[in-house]
Length: 207
Image 1 (cartoon, one colour):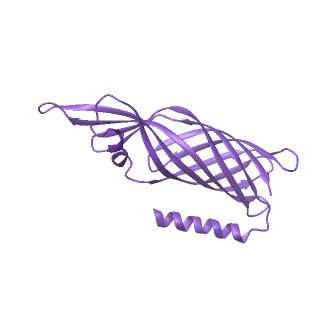
Image 2: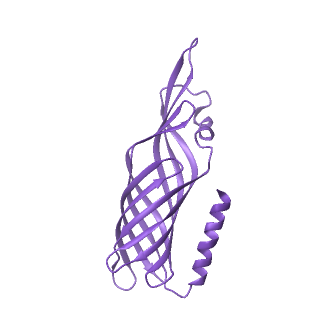
Image 3: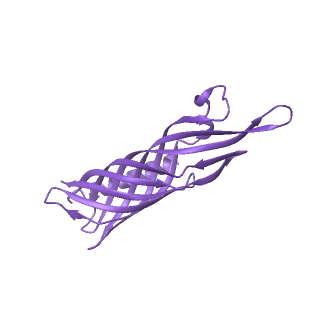
């Protein structure tokens, strides 16, 4: 995974250098994202449930134009995701007890999108790389001897995850120094089988 990520970023940087004569933009992305409820068989006797929830997300976006109608868009944003883990622990005798632990994971997400402009709409598509930061327990129906510090390594064996992002937007110039782009997006996380969609408003400054 790490070698693939390094190679992909190298290609993006090479493209950006090749077409450095074109005008680029930088801006802020304001998103209202809805995470769908999804149940995933995480590992033996453990089920992960992504809780249905709406979240506000903010990001920084940089776009490098490749031609009049195409470009590469890179964004960095901080996101959270509420979820619940259900697993079994030994009980008295030969019995088992079901433990439910709720928490919120946080990560940095970096979409790297190819963008195509038409006279009416902009279409963006590409992979997203998510870097896991931490997980914080919010509730549990069972006493865990070592607390939440014992759980992240068990729940999150991989630091990186891979997803996709598809976005449709419209560019609205506000004078010569500002562009506002309302849009809609859909983003499945392939590594963890999670899905989200929502609305976005991108405010950009050309330079």
